[in-house]
Amino acid sequence: MRKPYVILIGSASGIGKSTIAAAIASELNIKHLIETDFIREVVRGIIGPDYAPVLHRSSFDAYTVLRDKERFGDYESLVSAGFEEHAFFVIPAIEKVIKRAIEDADDIVIEGVHLIPGFLDTAKFKDEASIHFFILSADEEIHKERFVKRAMEIKRGGKHLEYFKENRIIHDHLVKRAKEHNVPVIDNESVTCTIKRMLSFIRECCKLITLKHSVDKLPEVIDIVIRKYGGRIVDVAYYIPGFAEPLKREVNVYDPREAQRFLDRLQSNPKRKRDLERLYKLSNNIHSHIICAPDKETLTKITQELDKRGLIYKGEDDQQ
Image (cartoon, one colour):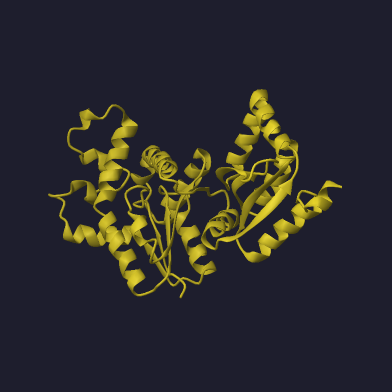
């Protein structure tokens, strides 16, 4: 039997996680969608403000009731500490919800600011569930625009709007924690693009594809796989004549901006580019990747376009 899906979507307020969570639940036909704010309210009913004052504040102003504030070296550390202590009380209840969903063999999507990488022990659920954890991000101007819109929609103007700076600190803190714990950070530029990139992890529609191209063709491969079709490039293996095993390197490229930064660094650093060109030359420009896509149809389209552009290695016939 298929393991139940457990999809965890975290972000600071105003990034768009509720919209994305609803879209993912709809795409995967998941009927259980829970916000961690609701779980927090249950916990508040059990743990009073005298014992846990941070729990009874919002995630962005929990720092105001921390004890010994002077022990924090800067404002960002203070806000982040208050946020983490606030979430700390909610995490055990979230794990109980996950456990119950797995026991009932129910798929579930959980979204909320309290989903902090490194706090949730997702490893203990991996044998029983297909568990996927994402942190959503956005650049500051887009975040500010969405934050204001969200505050007005739920009628939380005034004081709520005064805390954008603190919410941005929480955003940066979540992204940092995600990178430290190998949790995918998805830039929520648009709903369609975000859903595609998340599905490339969730559905695991992957295929080993052997390519043959020069370093100068890397932007073309990235453009097809990542930008156009919302896929992922996972790992690389270089096939060097005379070696029984290929030279392998672990990679997981899915973010178009991160991919562009890699290409820009390559162009701005001639030595780095020459080193990569030397490796390509040693392997006769032949290397393989695991290519992952949002679905089987998209994976087929990626393969066909790579083939049409002459980027797929076809064995000895390709040498002629």
